[in-house]
Amino acid sequence: MDVLSEVLSAVRLNGAIYFDVNARAPWVAETPSMSAICGDVMPDAEHVIAFHIMLDGWCWAQVGDESEPAVKLEAGDAILFPHGDNHFMSTEPGQRSDPDYSLYLRKEDSQLPFVLRELGGQGETARFVCGYLGCDQRPYNPLLDALPRTLHIRCPKEGGNLTCDLIRAALAENQSQRAGGETVLEKLSELMFVHALRQHIEDLPASATTWLSGVRDRHVGAALRLIHGRPGDDWSLDRLAKEVGMSRSAFSERFSHFVQESPMRYLGRWRMQLAARALERPDVSIADAASAVGYQSEAAFNRAFKKFVGAPPGEWRRSRAASSAAAG
Image 1 (cartoon, helix red, strand yellow):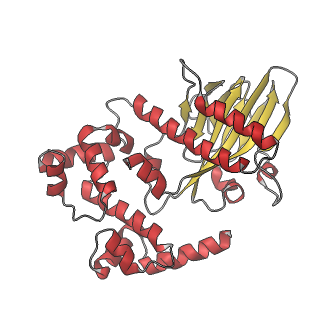
Image 2 (cartoon, helix red, strand yellow):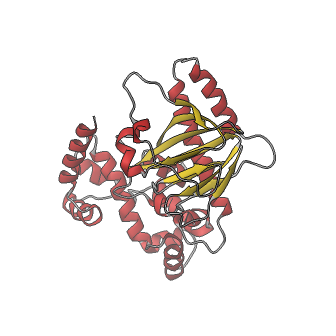
Image 3 (cartoon, rainbow, N blue to C red):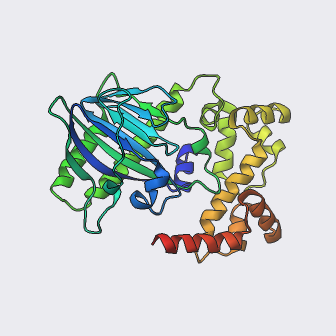
């Protein structure tokens, strides 16, 4: 499995398309911060990313504090707000409204996506879908810090837009309430996110210093593949450097330049992410979780876990179980 796929799996990415919106100009829609509505839209997720896909028409989109310029979305474009910022979309740049929190309350017998057909006035028509991506934030998700506050994915200039075409087909199926419609839309939203990440990686300038630019780099990317492919191996700085064909000092400097932390600290943090996920399973002992990520001593694992996560593994396990019970 490649590094990006491994991370998305380990941080338990999951998606949902929540709204199918038919609007007519002039219109405005304001979305609150994800911290305010995550308990309603994705109660099991630690972190929630909002996204919108423009199927027809156009609009402007911008983060709520207006610290970044408005982005014009056209048919086939998508926009994501990876850090959970409140944001707004409208036919006029800077046009605002008050968010309607009641929209996000889902009744037990309701079906997603909710269909909104009366947004706006009597002008040009637009259609877009709104959804959410949930993932783990702790103990360690290297992807989140590597993403900007606003991620605009433009429709391909040549050829069709497979994601939009599939979403249209799934929406048509969902309206007839065919079995599995919500699941199809969930998977399509996850596919859209992977496509967005790929395009973002390709568009990163050579000077970029983020985890994603490290994935793209020849030597750092090779080291990340080793770490993620065999996290339980007895890795050392010397061994990683030798494996990727660099000197110890040059490799350490290059890795830290892109990933913004040392190779061994990155390895330690990623091991704790994997161990934390394992500890959520009642059939996995602390010793089993330790061994799976390369620790032969449970005492050493306990010290490392507390260092990187902030709590001993047993305490972490109990707190996660309590959180899951509360969400349920």
